[in-house]
Amino acid sequence: MPTYTLDELIKKMEPQAQRDMALIRRCVDGLGLYAAGIAANDRYSKKIDEMRKLAENLVGYWGLDDYGANAKASEEILEAFDEKVWEARSGGAVTGDVFQTAPNVIYGLHRYGMEMVVSQGEDAMGEILDMSDLMKDIAQEWDFESDILDNLTARLEAEVRKMLDGITLPGQPVSGVANAGYAIEQGVMFENGLGVVLAHHPDAASPFVTWRFGIDDEGGRWYEWGNYFSTESRAKIDYINRATEYMERYSVKEAPFPTADAEVAAEIQSFPMPESCNIPVQVLTESQPLVTVTFSEHDQLRGVTKMPLYLANTLFFEADEKHQADFIQSGRTGSPYLKTDFRIDYTINGKPESYSGRYDVGDGDQTLTEHILGHAEYYRNEEGHQQYLAGKGAGELESANARYDFVINELVPFFDKHCDISKDEAAALSEAMGIYDAAAGQPSEADAPRIAYLDSVAEYCRQSRAALNNTGLDGLTEPPRFVAAAMKDKPGLDEKPSVLEKIRAAQNVPKQPREQKPERDKKKTDQEL
Image 1 (cartoon, rainbow, N blue to C red):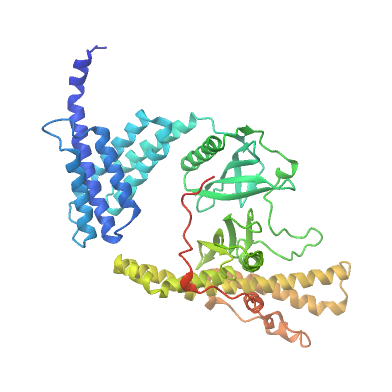
Image 2 (image 1 turned 135 degrees about the horizontal axis):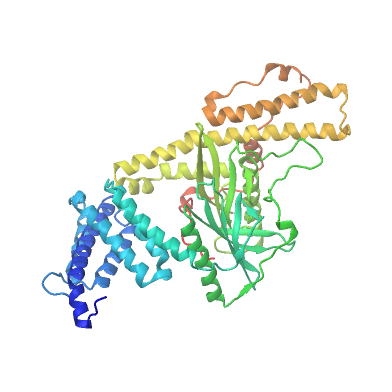
């Protein structure tokens, strides 16, 4: 193996250093073009600032103002970046050959990512994945399709996985415990009674999640502040960061992870079926919209796993009404709102979908579906918001309003019908269970017509729910006529008010005017442990 003096080594490396700097200059120039494209659609997007900071880091890392004739001063490079953005913000055309620029940006970001692997290692795992994601975003924006892109991003992601494989995660592996359908795989408990867990659900839209958790007075666990991810690497990095940062911030140490017999079981359902009867009063099925509370500041909602939408409507309404009354009675001042993040998983037109948002308990939004409707109606009609969307371009305005119209005219009626169906099914099953219980499991012949009617209602509800998911409201049929005929002297379930009608009738707390409400349905992205 040849040996070199320091001067010889520097001279040997000089050509490669020059090539790297030339590549990075072209990369920064391309980032300016990408940022200008963002500014043309959203003048004050936070992503512009992120691109500017990245450009500064690239210029500083390679010392582009340190090498004579072939280098521009760093100030000039960054000024060129700013000029592109300013021109786009001022309404000017965004010009540039993205076909020629894209490879320089892709290769430059990959080069920087690999430098972080060598120079910063485990401390930069999140930033390395950010480089990979940015490369993909730029390639998609500029229609840059290449196997090279896949290879370069895969190399960065493989380096992060390699580093993670060499790290001992805080806490210990966990098995037999689940929350909201996610299996807890790793957990750490601190000496103050709080902890962090890492969980996985292979069929979820975001298969990986980290939660903060604690133990209540009865020994059960509650979970909150979920951060959801599409990749295991991202989730592991978040788990490590949440655990280590919490221990450093509060000077706490790890404690033995709790393992109670009650925890080594299937997922705890918020609304379990009664064990004494084969006919459940409240049925959790994947065929109806299911609500998951992913974060809540309200005690009644914190730690809830899944529940049908028709029950969530009632639960959210009751929490909202009670919190308003308690706040007024206490004489407190300031904001009465308790933030609650939720996700609704449902099937519409035969395809699985989800709706995520934030419900402020104490805001007077009533039921969950009424909150969703009010949110869409407000932003569809609020002049300031419509002007903001128009400023982002006709395409943005049209796309956003199409979404609001869908929620108002299709999604909320779809949700309301599901609530009516589930309410009728629960009522029929509850009454049938009461008949069986009263007769000690042996109903009389006189009960037969009523049982037949209730059974028909339940079956009709199940069939209607499936039809609603696949073909929408137009695919529903009328209830069998003989069911109504069999109950001449008793009101049919279809004659009773819907769950929403009953809840609306019970509402006696004035709603806050819409004009005073801030934007609410935006997911938190930066949450502390």
